[in-house]
Amino acid sequence: MTFDPDQLEARLMSHGVYVMSLDADEERIEIEYESIKAGNTGAVPHREIGRVINVVRDLAEKQRDVRGEVTDLDGDRVGNWRAKAEWFRELEEDELSEVDFSERVIESIREE
Image 1 (cartoon, rainbow, N blue to C red):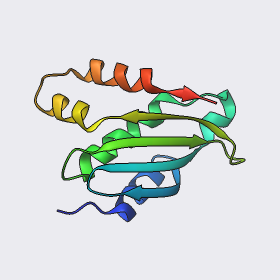
Image 2 (image 1 turned 90 degrees about the vertical axis):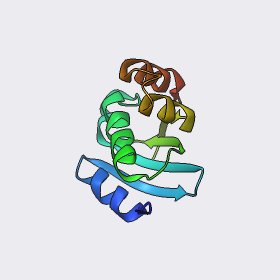
Image 3 (image 1 turned 180 degrees about the vertical axis):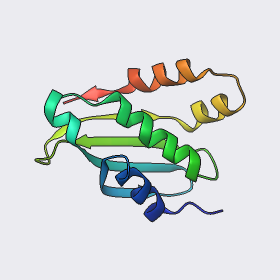
Image 4 (image 1 turned 45 degrees about the vertical axis):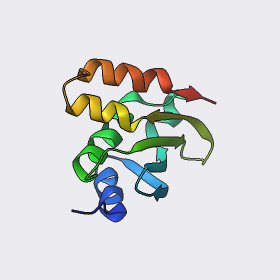
């Protein structure tokens, strides 16, 4: 199975995550998305990060670095986050717990 950016976008949209741009290659996935919840709080919503990561895990045939750029509904940047391919590998091989994985991602958040 090859990674399908259109399928990623459609699955995320069903979760209320609206993809503005998506750039992917064999090593990374960079996704900019609009968040309704970010407009309410001015912060990067953690649950949406989880949704993005879970959809990527379902669709990507191999681990890649994932970088998310979050905007509010006005297109203003709220912040960004990342998840390294190494973390996905460690998670898959039970070298890293789901909680530790989530903590790493949350620690990576940089808000505007």
